[in-house]
Amino acid sequence: MAINFRKNAAKALKQDDIQINLKNVVSRLRDHRSAAFTDAALFEQLRLECKSIRERAVFRLPRLLEQLEGNLLRNGIQVHWAETTLQANQIVLDIMQRHQATFLVKGKSMVSEEMGINAFLASHGIECLESDLGEFIIQLANEKPAHIIVPAIHKNRKQIASLMHKYFPEMPYSEDIDILAAKARYFLRDKFCNAPVGMTGVNFMVAETGTLCLVENEGNGRMCTTVPPVHIAVTGIEKVIERLDDLPPLLSMLVRSATGQPITTYVNMISSPRREGEQDGPEEVHLVLLDNGRSNICGDMELQETLHCIRCGACINHCPVYRQIGGHAYDTVIPGPIGAILEPQKAGMDRYGELTQASTLCGACSEVCPVKIPIPKIINRLRWEAVRQDTCNVSGSCPARKPLEAVIWKIWSQVCSNPGLYRLLAQLVTRLRNCIPAAIWQGWTIARTPPKPARTTLHERLKAKGIDYE
Image (tube, rainbow, N blue to C red; front, top):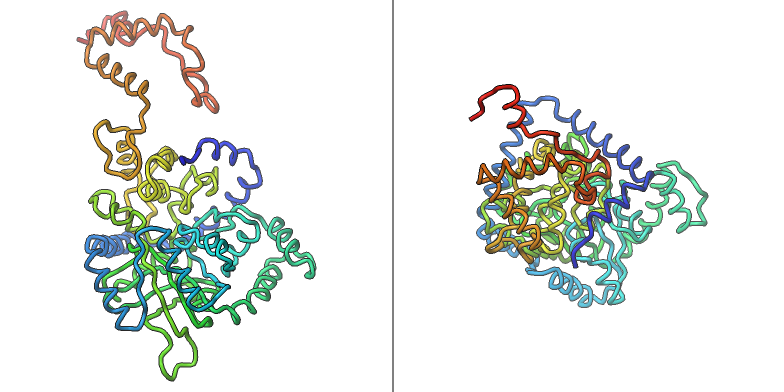
């Protein structure tokens, strides 16, 4: 079923608290990022290097995935392939049932959101607990993440304090951030120690060594990978990179673009389960590689740049549309500019094609992207796919253009290619300028003055001035 983006956006624009919360947090993230990239020349050099790394990896994706699988298996990590989210969910369920596990503690993972794993496992009697503080807050509120880096970006301190007090009434009400974090930490600590299975996402997979790289700031991800006896990592197939040497520049760009830090607090490198003589670590490590439309994207040389994304969120923070409406209006796992090009390609233009209109094409997203994804160019390509009259190269029903719209543009084409007809129509419009119904402008006049044709045409004005325009 297609989303109703316009209705969602209109609703979000009426929620003043969301507007204030968004602007406060997004402004700080943008300021931190700017402070982290003071040397423009060095920034551009690093961008080019990271673009080359991701370009090379996506171009060689099939071969690198085979190399990755071989090295992971040699390291003792079990690899599972899933073409759809349903298959990925079933793989996780099978692992849980094999270990008779009824509880799963999760680190932050956008792919697990894409899978809808929490609801799926809950329908089979398995509890999932989010351990990332932002995701934990969202789970308590029974909401979806509003941002890929700051899931609870739309909530302020008072809202979070009220939510925590509702679920932990035995603890005194407080709006102090440290106390709120301590509440969550106290609750989660016992869960970490007793969870039979932990789940995380993956930021990068190194094909050369069979290594899974996970970056985070809270330490909860490391608890999910190390304490439970079974660790399940879920990720999209595009997260692979070729060499271990490719990792440092990507990590540098990721954390500075996302939060403005010179380096993240925790960098986890996972290459195997617990080995003999080691004191900690899981006894089993599973990697679920999800396709879910990514192979189709990879098959198009122009659209495959979408898969270069390293999920830093910089484009989201700089998007004027997102800053006004927030992430929930998109009704997708990934919001903002990157979501506007990724989600229609994965789930279909018939469902998410409207998101390609959620852009001013200002280019801010492309300017800050650490891997130089030409997002406005891809948006235009997808818009073209939505209205083309032959066949559609993107999943979902095409074309999206209504029959009446197609007729109107056909007439417009004929008028513009016939000078005599164009002049006649221009004269007619100027003479009937006061008779144009307001309804013709539809949503344009919600925030703008209705346009009105001039009293005379340009040709008529030039002729009156004695200017030869022929």
